[in-house]
Amino acid sequence: MRRIEKPGPGEYAPYAIQYIGLLPDDGSVLEHMRYNLETTQALLRSLPEEMLRYRYADGKWTIKEILLHIADDERIYAYRALRFARGDRTELPGFDQDAYTLCSGADDRTVEDLLEEFASVREATISLFAGFSREALTRAGVASGNYMSVRAIAYHIAGHELRHLNIIREWYL
Image 1: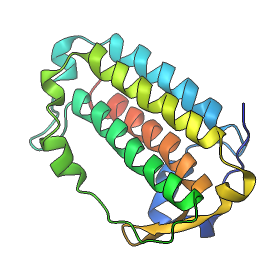
Image 2 (image 1 turned 180 degrees about the vertical axis):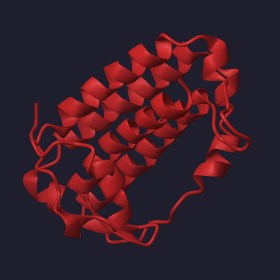
Image 3 (image 1 turned 60 degrees about the vertical axis):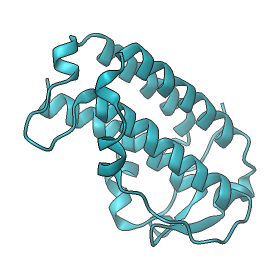
């Protein structure tokens, strides 16, 4: 599978280290994405429905909502990567993750349906990044007021999922 070197600190906003820092510096981010997907699927399939709808505090998301949030975030970041990789210099807007989650309807869907959607998103993401040239991976742009390279976006996507898996294990299980 395609190797993508880990980005340097100047290629992303400081907040992104919470995601990017969760991945090894082995250039195998696309393989990690594939493995993370399998881990997420196995974990969520092992949980009973009441756990998937559990909120550990008022205003916190359910596990189903977290899963759809991961897919939403991945779609948005992949779109940003596409724009930046193609040389688009337009500054892109941010998004309100809480508003997206509130309107997602995740809790009304089956976990299998959510996992199928997430798997489709992940396959599209892997395919997108696998097709970028070395030059495209080092292009960058600004979204939500933050500078980020295309390869940093790949690591953000993979690390974002890991961060949420860690949150699920710590706060929900």
